[in-house]
Image (cartoon, rainbow, N blue to C red; front, side):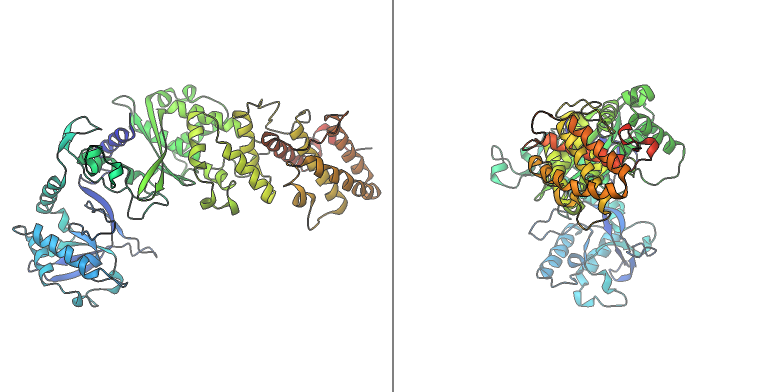
Length: 593
């Protein structure tokens, strides 16, 4: 199933559930309504914003589909911003007169001959309106540059002008006239009027605020056999409105279908594999999927919330969803779509579809690879939290391009992780030396999946004193030298970690020779104050060195990237061993007599 086919089916379900506006309409932000008497005079201006909120958010309303604006002047039908409707703006308005004239001209032409009282009132209003009439108190200054609609005063509180039957019928006729010729729709396989321009998709992070296109042709290089615009990939106007409507609904914040990962705006949805499937299973699948990659929304611990939490905990513990809830694993089809901005268009970062059980199994594998001890303080951080650890200053906007999409694709499909994940984490470790659980977990996951290291012996979850990998041993040894300095000197302005962690994995031969020489005076000082601790630390250094090459130089000139990752893993494990209570510490750290 193609992306457009899947989105079209989702749109059909949303239409049946009343979650999509009627075909030819779009949900837009409307702030004011102009109430008109039948003679075309203004009765009042109604503020539709939510006055109970400090930010005064506009009202979300289904209005006739907006036109696509690039550099030209193009008015919407029966609604628009005040520059078009009234000829007033808060800015300079270099094209203000042209925009208002275009709105008036379109409506005088298309409303001509209508006998509907509301449409006649709008036509009379536009014929008599002058921008100089815009003045308080009837016309508030805060109305400038916001979207407005109209209503007939007699319909107040019941419907707006664009919702009147005559207005809907007129809009349907205008849409039919604007569609292209008949062609076989690539999505449905049926002959229907083709959409020459597909509606805009809004809500993709980094894309134009007015929306961007998933399908468009605007240059000769994109055309085929002399076709223009949408004729190059014929999609019916109905399907184009439906799939973009479904996308726009999913991309809304708080929709339960949206997740922002780096530059990839990710949407997901579930659909039944067979007719008659309980709709509650689809909601359960989508709630569980949120828990896979994001923090579940704050809800009361009702029956479903408890069920979701129980499923997540058991999957993370290694159980298969097919054993926990087979009807969810096999009866639900799941879709994940990642979109990113590309000028006025959208790029598809990835698209994945399969049984929900396959997704759960791949997530279970991902969870096992990301396990680390001690774990992150936040328990199971969302994926975006891990991505911030790869970014300069920990900011989402600095996440390396394409990394989020490539990493999520690898998680969904079970394929190798992008090596940019490894290089990005190593780069951040060299830059700031913050060896935390999130970064080490990512390093371990790449080592297991990409470099096929044994998850228990070569890349362990917890501290492994028997591990003989040189990178792991050097990381442990670095942590011991840091502990020797800390025990001898206490808090210092610049520790061994601050000075040398960035270069130690890259140039161990050079750095560890200096660390070994520098530890001698620290141990000497420690022997005068705490001789037992000195003996313990010397034993620990000896036990690590003993596992290296005793007959040659134990410190290599350089470490490969995967060994540098093991260096970080060994450092993290050994460092945290020093903070364990004595009864929980490894045997090699027992107190000297």
